[in-house]
Length: 136
Image (tube, rainbow, N blue to C red; front, side):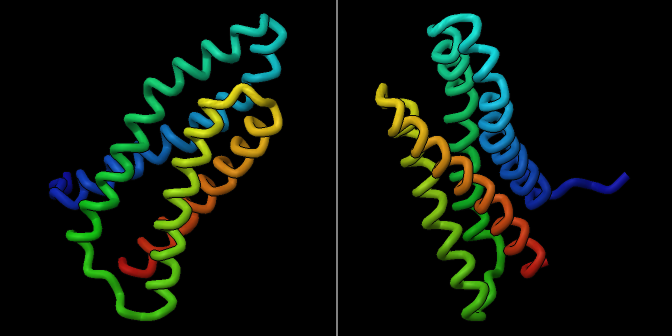
């Protein structure tokens, strides 16, 4: 069996946290129509339950991303730096939109911030794979 390294643990934690954050959003979104049929409080209860695992996952992904800044030798190529900078911007967009989504009671805000959060989360996963492929 291969021996894991500290890098293996860092990447594993980052990918696991991203899977919870992004995958959980889509799983919850898929359940919303059924939850609404149960009653108006069901959706809110499910969202609050998800938040208890989603926000810690977001923090783990953020912290392991910071850890990666120090552990991975980044390329000085302009394309790599632009891609990395875009990923950092999207981390902020995803976090802010999720916080706004969770704290609003206005349907247009909830819809818009949910969509922005979902698209930015997907883009983050793609950019993470792109960056890992380039530096690997």
